[in-house]
Image (cartoon, rainbow, N blue to C red; front, side, top):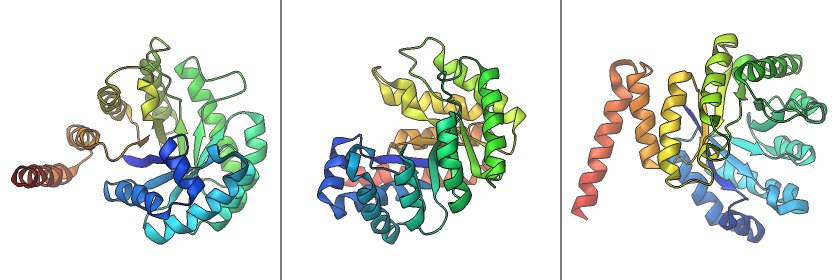
Length: 271
């Protein structure tokens, strides 16, 4: 399970304020904690800065890369901001995100071809999100054809069938799960990804829903999630699901996780 840490998103008021004020310690700490918790990428979104987005990204990226050993996921719908960010990012970033809309393809494929990031691609077109699993598969195949022309290997693509809020759309969770399973069957080398917290939007006990949904999605073949790596119970679900799905040979990761958790609980009891 590839975790993309979601906490450095300017839609959060504390993050927006930190980016506006150039609060180095806050930004570093948010990123550092997510890496320590197991994030493979740290998502960075400065879109709420509006006209200041490019400057915000160009300030934050060098700061974070001095702190981190993992790359960044550059999260912006703005092609100018994306190009500026990828230009200064050292190593291979993750582009978040491309869609199947022609405007997105026209704007981002040249940038992808030039900077060669890994890519999150959404099954989203001008008509809206997919209304069935077969539609999601068709869109995923078209996205992969476009990405192949830009030089992206299947292993470097993350297809998102789009999680919609279960409280708004009946059957949204089931549709996503079916879509993941069918995409993995048709495109086995491609990664699948979920914006996990979308499923629980507007509902109580959001973390419970997120954790349960992730375990179900992992059973269908989900490879990655944009989520909060500081959610200890979510990490527990990932460890347990990997053990039960045969993704953890000899259960080594699960046993290490269990020992670390038991130690942390013992230490907390002593304090």
